[in-house]
Length: 432
Ligand SMILES: [Zn+2]
Image 1 (cartoon, rainbow, N blue to C red):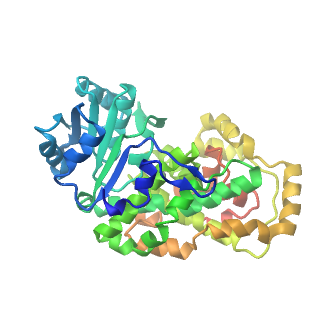
Image 2 (cartoon, protein in one colour):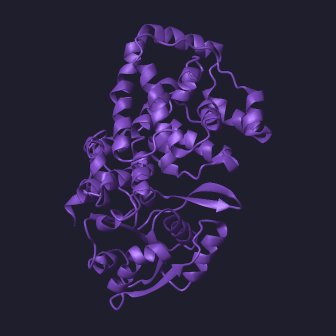
Image 3 (tube, rainbow, N blue to C red):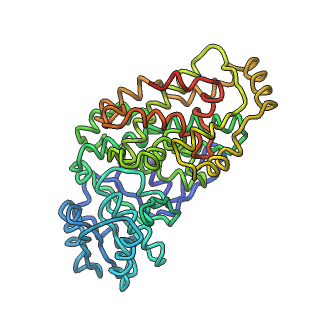
């Protein structure tokens, strides 16, 4: 058991007591291992979680070279194991069917890889009620979540599937992955701050549920991870362990809270907007890269608004039907109405809010400011880690990105700073 696992060992063993309610927390993943090297230890770990099972190892040409062959060689002869090198991996209905066919004579599947391979194996094993484990090849939070992103025709859907049995991180392998992927993983977890501010804001204003469990755990390592951003980019194994641990805890947020809110608010809404509406102008940026750029935009708005000495003045919520038809398409109008249903402020609610904030502005902002990182801190950490920080750095169409900031609030039902800013006429000033 590696010392780099930190608090994660207490989570997999069910020994961690949540200080917010004094109850033990349990997660369905049996083992999460973060080690500088797992070379030669593969059998010990797999024997612990997949004892006497007939196992298929799934990799692609790249991950087979990087790790798959080694895992196979170290298990072969001790476990009942075969391998499948996937020629054209694609996490679509057809791709998942291909994995189901290849694994039909096996009890369990071990994925070697990241996004596509992990999600395809996760979903295929869920459909066939088989166990799956994964040896990671990049740092990322998707290994520890129960969701998979799968294409149906050309639409990407996020599907709730099941948890991995074991998740294994060999940092010497992770350090060899393209730096762009490490930076994207960093960008996809630094959004803790913007997501927490939004989720808490929604809790305070709309009385929606809020759970600080993931943040207590992330708080153990975030400061150190941010301070080590440069070393993470350089592939330093101890620093990569911090990013890996934070990514794993971020992924586990769904198990702690029963929702994805803890790590997915306005910044993720903007990223979804990019994926849904940029169409042929999508610059090919990854989820993490988009989330990172959006996190900086959202952080600037949060810091600007919440650090103000005086409260904003609200008007009732306006849904710009015509603009939505033009920008998002006529088919989105009804969907927008549905998403906005519970976060529309009418005149009465607006008056109440203005009176309340007029009297209590500092008390209102205090808990939010407590969980908010300064914009400059996020900016320089992302810079140190080599992450893309602006639409320009990502070759993204600036007009479309501005639309994402402006209309992103209308495509999801989560109440965020974008709603707060737009209903008080402050959003435009943060859009270039
Ligand atoms: Zn994300």
